Image (cartoon, rainbow, N blue to C red; front, side, top):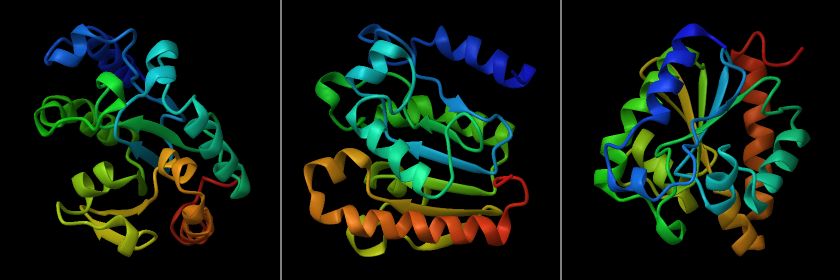
Length: 191
């Protein structure tokens, strides 16, 4: 583990800055290649993630892994996955704005240390955080935007796809477009 990331993780595991720290089972810091050119960002951990301490390991994570495999990506090989908040919101509700504000520094430091070329927002909450507060994922998913020297895109959260299978084709198309963008701008993602 990168020493900077290791120290950040140690600090994050002790965090009690917001009420979510008092209700968690585990901090869900992040997982993957620590110098990944592509980073996926979700909103926050769910029940399975809280129990295991790893992002996207429940049903939504299984779907995400299948989508990643379709475009030759894998969480421990060539990408990194993290969330805006590191502790599970009760009943898997959306993280509150105050919780996001309290926790975002952890994610921003992860991004600084990893230095990805592309950030993929999984769902509305992450997209609104990284692209704009008025971002409408149903209308703009799959768009690539350059901001702060990085390319940012958003697609539907895998949990939303499980709830509404009609958006699965759009999500798959977003991943295909992502693969093409990676080939254009990344040098190390595909062996």
